[in-house]
Length: 145
Image 1 (cartoon, helix red, strand yellow):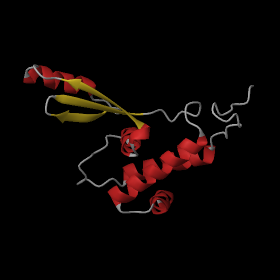
Image 2 (cartoon, one colour):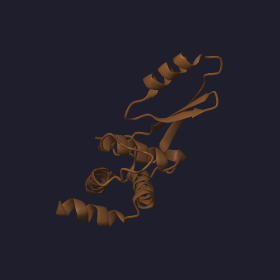
Image 3 (tube, rainbow, N blue to C red):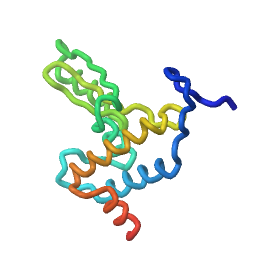
Image 4 (spheres, rainbow, N blue to C red):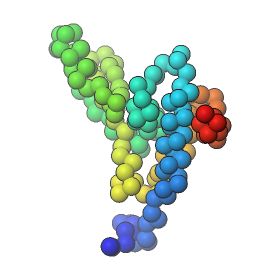
């Protein structure tokens, strides 16, 4: 197997950390279990929450596609909106513009550990803001359950 190297500097790329990856997924699962019912965003499952958190983590972690729906009748607009929605797609309308927001892939072969660490920290910051609880406290609640 060929060692992966940085395209810019040629240094070996550090492999992804399985414990770090599992910790993040456990954190997201715990956050889903404790998600407040009065929050504007209501995830349908932990996977839906994960995709939303990645999108909220910042512009480096999401893809935004815009569509100009000007000229379409309201029924067609509603159809377009309903087709766009799934657990990995977020966004909405602003005027005639539809924003489709999707998270980037976290797959081991797509995201190096350094980028994953940054993403994890951003997700933890989003969770602290949304829930008012430190990530370690969320994990303790999960362990106690």
